[in-house]
Length: 439
Image 1: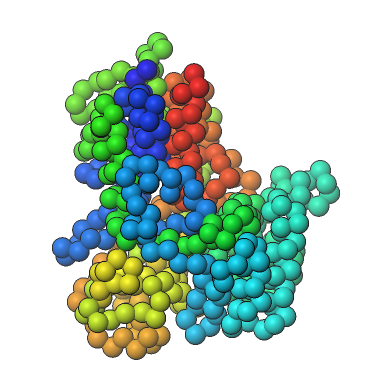
Image 2: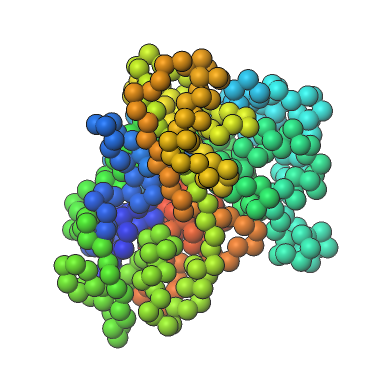
C-alpha cells in the first residue's frame, strides 16, 4: 500500500498520522513553504503570527488527541479557560466549575447584561434542546422546516423558540458566528446544535476554551510531519500537485518533481484547489458539482503591535456591535506582550473597507472601549476571503469516498456534522485513513 496525501493542513496531516501509526509509509505533498493550510503560522516584522485566530474547544477530542500523539503537551501548548462570553460593557457569561449541563444553566441565569426574563428564556431553550437530544424534528413528524429536510436557519430556530432580539444579539448570534462563521440568517441550525451538544451537554471540560500559545504550524502539522517521517513517510514542502490521473488500479500524480504513482490518494486541499484537480476526471462530476456549489465566508484578522505594557482586561474579549468581534491579547496568551489581534468573522460591511481603513476602525475601537490612546507601532491585516464554507441548512457536502475507489477527499468542507473547524478537518482526515485501512 502506497498512499499519498495532497495538502499538509490539519485534514491532510491527521490522515498522514493515522496511516503512519499503522506503519504505512505515506507521502504528503504541500505546495506552500510551510504546513498548516488555512491554520498556519506566518511571520511579520520579526513577530510570529497566525493567518487567523482559531479557538479550540475541549470537545475537540480528536484534534487534541492527535496533538498529544505527535508530541504536544496540552497544558503547555494552550491557555485553557472555562466557558466565558464577554462583550465588553454589554454582556458577560461565565460558567462555574459544575457538572454539565448545570454549569451552563447557572451561567445563563447569572449572566450580566440581560434582564431576568431573557436569561430564563435562554435557559428554557437549552433545556428544550437537551430534551430533543439536540436534533431537529424530521419533516415526516410534521414539525420540520417546511419540507427542507428537517433543518432550518439559526434565525428561524431562534424565532420558533421566542428568543428575543437582545438575547439573540448578545448570546446566540456571537455563538453562531464563532462556531459556524456564518450569519444566523444563513447558518444551519442543526450544525449549530451539533456543536452545542458536544460542547455543552457532555462534560464540563468539553466547553473549555483552549487558546494556543504556539503558532498553528508548530502546534500540530510540523510535529505531525516529524512523526510521519520517523515512520518512513515523506513530507514534501513547496511541492504542489498539478494533476491527478487514474491509471488502471493506480493513481498518478504530476508534480514539479515529475510523475509518481500511488495506490491511494487523499486530496486534502481547499475546495477551490480540489475542484481544479478533479475537473478533468469525468467520473467525479458529482463530487465536483457539490464542491463548486459551495459558497464561502471570509475571516479578517487585524494584528496590532502596541508597546509591551498595553493589555486587555481578559485574554479574549468580545465587542458588541463593533467592527471587531473578538479581541485576543497575545501577551496574556503567548507572552507576546503588546500584540493584540482583532477577528472579524463572516460577511459584513467591513469587506467594503481598505485594509488601512479597517485597521483604523479597530484602532479607534480600542481607544474608545479601553482607553488605548497610543498608536500601534504597526498593524497587519490578514484577509482570508474564502476562509470557510457557508454552513447553510441541508448543505450537500461531498463524501470522503469518491466514485474513484482509490481517491478520497478530506477537508472541513466534506461530509460531516461539524462546521468549518479544525475538528471537522481532522475528523475528515481520520475518516479517509479509515477507509484506506479497511480495504
